[in-house]
Length: 136
Image (tube, rainbow, N blue to C red; front, side):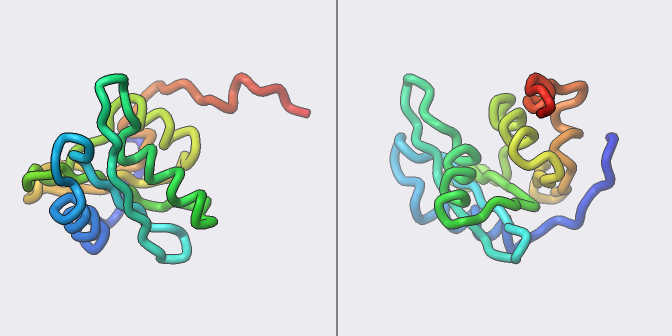
């Protein structure tokens, strides 16, 4: 690992698990995500599953946070429906999280070994989206 591990935000895991349990019913919504903002607020969201590749809960979460004026997410977690527990982000979500919030911590691991790791640790040797932009 390249970064320092962070303390696990158990309140955040509980918030995502609550949304997964109460809002993810049926095939359209199977994952919930929660994030802690820099000011302490918790934002939650669910995925919009669709066979054409609907957005993951983490991507919906980014849009939901922005709609609420939150632009500094510090920690993110995703939880599956039917008590599947914490689910690590897919590759696309890892890249988007890194691009939008390069210092965000992501909670991963089985319930008895949860850990919060820097997003860069989940996407080593990654492409940095801003690198293609010319300095002005």
